[in-house]
Length: 183
Image (cartoon, rainbow, N blue to C red; front, side, top):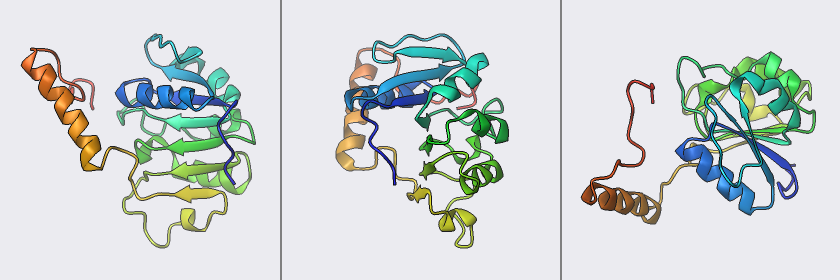
């Protein structure tokens, strides 16, 4: 059973638009928020920001690990056996962004051997998740059908209206794909 995040340390990997929004909401829920980024970034509601080169120290501190990284050549498979070994046995993985950030075999091993307490997964290497996939049988996993992003008309409308205003003011739009970054 997944615990409350109140008074826990929640690590957010990636503090771009998705990660910073998640970090803010997690902070409001009463958690200590730490972040992991490639380039230094300060946010008032993130208590500490680790650089990617400090990933071991970051992973050792988290009670809940939230993945909010884009999928690029640098981030594909970023969590494997070595990284799961750095986490607390009581820690949970929450992946709401991209399935291939996690090496599935390593995750299944970490879950079955209780090297981490559990996982909440909204994304997978293959979607929809095949009916015979071992994640369906894992007792310490909660699976959701890729629904973590804005999907209700009122949520999508807010994003559209913000961007419409930014467009009218000649400002840079939110959520624009940057091909040079790979996302």
